[in-house]
Length: 111
Image (cartoon, rainbow, N blue to C red):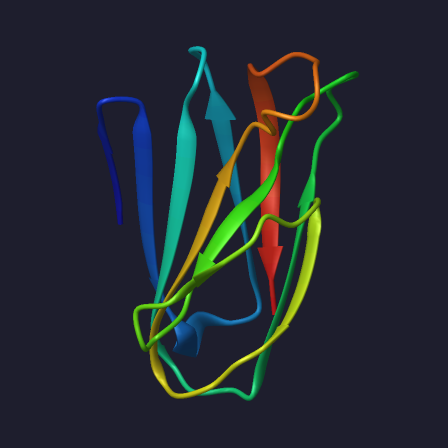
C-alpha cells in the first residue's frame, strides 16, 4: 500500500512478506519515506538503502518501535535489536548534517 501527503510517502507492508525490497523516488526537496511494517515479531530488524545516484543525501533517520519509542539517526544500513512485537516504522530522508542531492531513485531492502 502506498500513499503520499505533504512530502511524506507512506508505504505499508506486512511482516509476512519479509524479506522484501521496495523501490521509491524522491522528486521534491525535503521528502521522506515512512515504511510501516505491520505484525513484526522477530527479535531484530536489518535493512539497507541502495541507490545508483551519485552524491545522494539519504539515510535512515529514525526507527519507531512497537512500544512507540523512536531511535536514530542511522546511516544507510540499520541492524536493530527489537523489544516487543507489533508495528515498526523505518523513516528515511535526508541527513541535515550532510550535503548532497536529495532527489532521486533508491530502494530499501528489509529482512
